[in-house]
Image 1 (cartoon, rainbow, N blue to C red):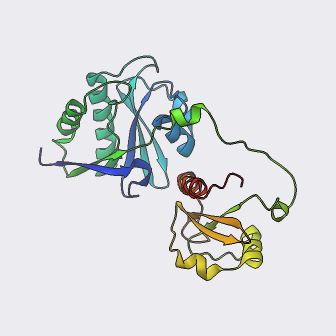
Image 2 (cartoon, rainbow, N blue to C red):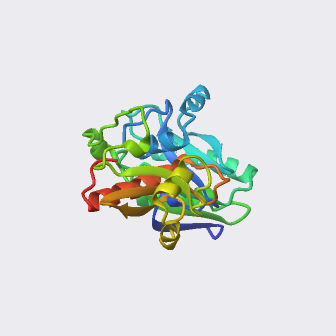
Image 3 (spheres, one colour):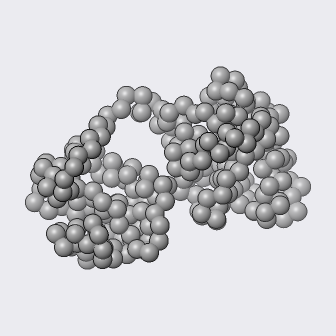
Length: 262
C-alpha cells in the first residue's frame, strides 16, 4: 500500500489546496438536505441539473470540472432515505480512481465519506480507500478533511434579506456596509472606487493582510465597513467558494461585535 498516502487533517474541505481535486458522497438524484455537505457543494459549484441528466446510478461517480479542478460526486445510494453500503462506497471509489488515472490526478481531498448519517465506520471506509488506491501506478495523496454541517443552524433562519432600490451609501447609519474587493485593494473602478473615495484607509486595509475568502474591516463613525476579499487581483474573477467563506468571516466579526444589520 506504499502508493497511497492518507493524510487526516482538521482543514475544512473547502479550504483544501487548489492542487487537490475534491470528492464527497451523494445520492443518485443529487438531492441534498439543506445545510449538509452535499447541499454546500451544490450551492458552491452548482450544475445540479447537469449532474441529474447524466443518470448516474449508485456505485458510480459523476465528475465536474471547476477552475481547472475536478469535483467528484461519489454516488453511494439511490435516495436520501437509504443508507450507503461498503460495497457501493468501494465501487464509487474505483470509478473515481479510474478517472483520476485517466487524467493523471494524484491528489484529492474528501471528508470521512458516509460516516455521518449513513453510519459506516471510518476505520472500514479508510481501509477501502487504501485498498482501492494501493495498486495505483503513481503515488496518490488522499487528504481527509473536516466539514461543517449547517443543517441545524439553517433549520431556523436568523437572517432576513430585504432588496431595496437606492444608493448604497444612503443606507441608515445603523447598517454596516458591505462590498467585495480583491486582496490587492486596487479599488480603481465602479463601486470599489466609490468606497475608496468615501472611506479611504486603503493602507489600513493592506496592513490587515487579508487574502481570498476572508474579510478586511474598517470602522468609521461607529459603522463597520466590510470588504469581502473574493479574489487576489482585481483582474481575476471571484468564485462562489471565496464569497462563501468571506461571508462566513464577516458573520463571525458581526457576532463578536454585536452587529446585526448590513
